[in-house]
Length: 374
Image 1: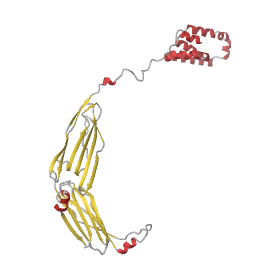
Image 2 (image 1 turned 60 degrees about the horizontal axis):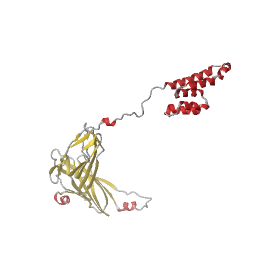
Image 3 (image 1 turned 90 degrees about the vertical axis):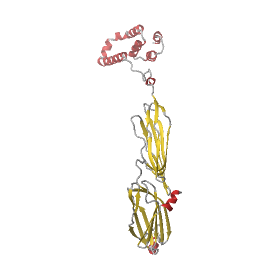
Image 4 (image 1 turned 135 degrees about the horizontal axis):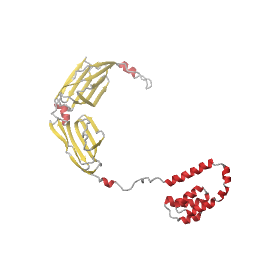
């Protein structure tokens, strides 16, 4: 309420100008001697004086590096031949010294006949309004802006809140820090915590919100941090110097430093005594000797002529006796398996299956019992 009173009663700075007796202008600024980044309110009124014409207005503050502005209000009195506009701006000077508020304006003039012609068509036959556009040169308003006290970071009336979820943690397990700056005044986004060799800092861009109204700007800036480390570390303290132009007082926005204790993990507890997957075993030469014997038999079959086997018929007749002798003399499951596989005889399939169970799957079947299957 005090801001509104000051806007309308205390700091009025009024300029009235008449141009060619057809438009009247008035400018009202709430404070012509503000501090840097202090909110001021500018009200602009445009009134049509020559009511014999049909007029249109287009008006705005010019963009400038010396100030920042937001239009927070607009009213239009649309009475025919009696046009009136009222604009309200929220302005923040961005430098000290002399600051010029500059304007750009265009007035458009037409008459009743041209207006009647433009609205004579239906919605499918819109006719453009013929008018004369005239740029209007307006004198700037001069602000004498006061410099801020040395070392000021924030201008306005703000509060500073912070929460840390814990000060004891395990190695590489993050802690969460939330910080919020909120209040009324000039605020823009900025980084708060710097990176450090003592810890790892995880964050995103701060969340910035602001609302501009006829009583000023309400803003908030939120930071979310996750911090982790292998060893104990210290989060640094934060100190922001703030200045309230309304009370002309300096105040502190601060967060204390935090010592975070990190419990180290016993590395030996993370190790086990078993290998997954199991280590590779030595080369099984029996497999290779078995494969080599197959190759030898295959090559011999290709090289030896058929009549050779005829001449050796009497030898083949004693093959079964030789095989029987080999089987009887074999002392190991693995040896017997090699002999039967070389025979490639389906009659031995049951015995081969039993031998494979013993050799490869550690099954318990006696050698004599398997020989009985042959």
